[in-house]
Image (cartoon, rainbow, N blue to C red; front, top):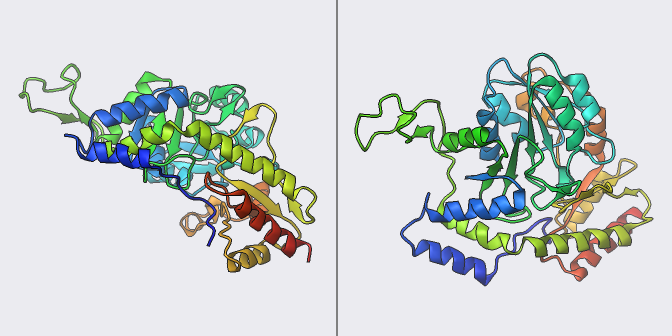
Length: 374
């Protein structure tokens, strides 16, 4: 089976992990600091490493102070965790529709969804294509809301010349094996705001406060530490940070290859009947995590099943978040976001990863053409 995504791990990565295993630190040591500094150079803002992408979202919402009675406006065209982690904090999630072409959160739909209770707007850089952050920033500022970027797909992408990671108040990353780089499991929160980043760091470290200057009982003893607000253990260990730092050295090569493959798909699939290719706006330079095509005329299920049967591991990204039973049980109904639902009905993610060969890609294209032209 040819997968839709796969990690690339080299001998250098293995050596970096081995060195970490042989060091005095397995978790919360110098490797974490190094990875966070390496990541900040790519993200354009200081970063806090966490245990996975879902933890990054939970941490970001917690750092923003999201809680019961607050509303979070977000996109339904995402993995459920973008919404679910806000719901777990007691917030009410308001789903706004997506742009018809990019499947990213539509700023006009966000504007219409904002109320006096809106505390955060959370965009997703679908497939690695950055959302319209300048427009979203205007809406967020007018609502006095925090702007959050779920950039799980988009590390290495830029928007109007600025790196993803520097565009929102809080940005989250995922380093799952199918993403643009991997730490095995892992994620991060980036923020140009020192106070928000500090809150993120405290939350991901079980809420522990060790700074005697802010302790309520600083004279308790040298061993003393305090918890002022609830947090969770979302730390990313040195061993995985070592892998992340090693992977970051090849991020430019990862981006170049993904862009080459995307351009080659564009060329080979141009003019195929019943198929719509992804769009790229002129002011973005995406590092594509996915290559999402749209299969027209109600044939997506057929194409998915036939490609899978032929050993080509296509995927569908994503079921609209409010279609999940956990949101159905809260009263969310289908039909809320017609653009997102129309996109979902046609979307198919073709294999895209660094080690995908031209021959592999030709196989995908030939199989897809054969089905659609029959």
